[in-house]
Length: 231
Image (cartoon, rainbow, N blue to C red; front, side, top):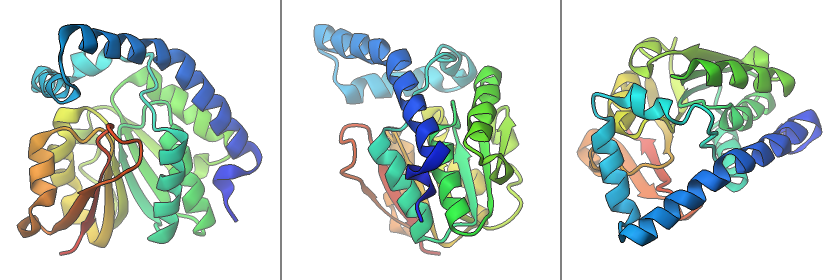
């Protein structure tokens, strides 16, 4: 059984991906055009954004309160598959946004026999919308969305974590990972989308820190990093 591609879950996901394209398409097109005009590479732009975020991530992220900044359908189905593969029953998500990735992961929890997903979303309006979308998909009983700064909301995730999705403010990738790290079980999967922060990449790619990591060939250019906790 695959709840993510059947019934109302599939219908809600299709609708949300369409809304995401309508809301974010023009923004991404302008961003790419501006990069081409200025001669700035994606890596350079990412480094500047991370620098702007440090110490000021609520304001920087707040500029995107109407943007989905969501995973693609292909990456969403990969999230579902990974959660099924590791038989996840407890998932942590940093950066819920409008709840698209959350629905894929919660669908996997449903098909795994149940569990809990704890999500964190900084923007109040996004948290409200995410809860509504998740409820509409019939997955609300599996999900708790904590609104606020993830450095506070994810301090206590209630037990061992099987899978973590890191997809929020880029400058917080490493701090959030270290925050939840004591709860990661051996073999836990950590998926980071838009993993452009050098400190995060250096940390998970250093075997001395207890991870095996590599960049995924899914949605190339979006910096999808895969890691497994081996300690």
